[in-house]
Image (cartoon, rainbow, N blue to C red):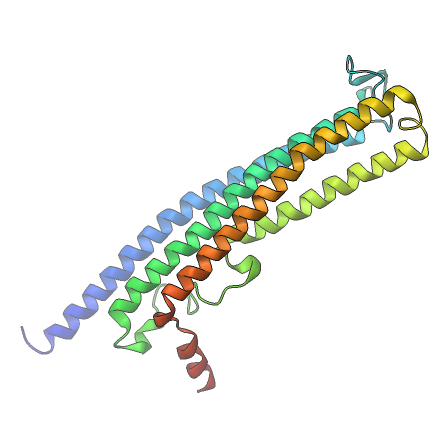
Length: 249
């Protein structure tokens, strides 16, 4: 094989490698996109049902557990719910959001882990020619190093994780508004029987939501630790120094 044929052969091999990596990334990305669409549909549906119940609910608790619907109906003719239904909906929503957030954490941090492997393979073939690390296919900063906070999970998953936290905040604030109106109007806690049912339901809400929130936080911290360990293990191919050098030039 001549001298001119050897560089062409290496270039063809490198191009084939990039195409294979890009194809695999596209497959993974399409699968993650399908998961993201399913997650968004689930969030919108769950939040829509909660909004409907919240709008058509009163600020009083049910006198007992035998009924959750008020005898009267709203002006639009739809059913009116006791405050118990809002509390139960918050409980269900917290479980659903916790599961969906768990999936986003798993997908987002898992995809970043795959990026370490992809970058390591590319580095193995391009480290002798640093200029070639400016890829033809991947964006210039397509590497997993130096990510912080919501940027550690790759793609939209990091944003969705923060959106779940924001939705949780909205849900609990809206519930506090209902409870505040209940107390101020003396429609619930100032009476004997609504106080019993209301407090029991709120205790159940705390028993369900606190473990969900704590488990999500622990799982996310675990994934952050795994990311930092990977970043340390792959520190010899960290492109930060090279990027700083080229930016100064």
